[in-house]
Amino acid sequence: MKPVPQPLAGVFFDLDGTLLDSARDMHDALTALCRELGIEVPRYEMVRETVSRGARAVLRCAVGNDEARIDAVMPRFLELYVATGMVNTHAFDGMNTVLDHLEARGVRWGVVSNKAGSLVALAMTKLGYDGRAAAVVGGDTLAKRKPDPDPVLHACALAGVEPGQCVYVGDDPRDVMAGRAAGLYTVAAGWGYLDGVDPQAWGPDAVSADPRQLGALLGLA
Image (cartoon, rainbow, N blue to C red; front, side, top):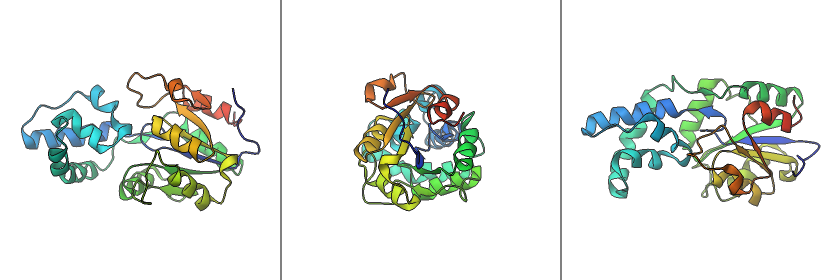
């Protein structure tokens, strides 16, 4: 296995399915929307596996592949999502320990997500991370989104670290593609919303089964 860059300068995370488990609130918002529309509510397990692919993928679970209809209901879905207050969103078990150890070692960390920046900010504030992250990049921060490397490179610039001395962690192939193209060491989050896929197939530098294993990989244990 390829070694983690040393000295380690920065670690960046995807948000949903990597840093945070937000699936329950996304499903609650979709449930409320389906009831308003008078359509069947998809199973939670089905929705959970799509969350990392974004709101459009979540909506497809309920309304199918009609992109015009997805466009029409998207604003209301996002309103309902914000209305959940993200009360069920929480860090994955062990992730807070990883962040604490990174900070104790002076390693900068941040978030690079395809989620709208305003929603990323709400989630970061809710979890108390807003004053801790060295960089927060949302899907609308730049003109391009993952799998383009620009958002990852932008996060490195904001944090003041060299990409080659950093790690990017995510639970979707777009995360591995973006991190690799930006020159970072890539880790697939095996605890994320993988939809039964073996993340090794994405070609990451490493796969971690859980945040504790990630901490050991990063030399934080």
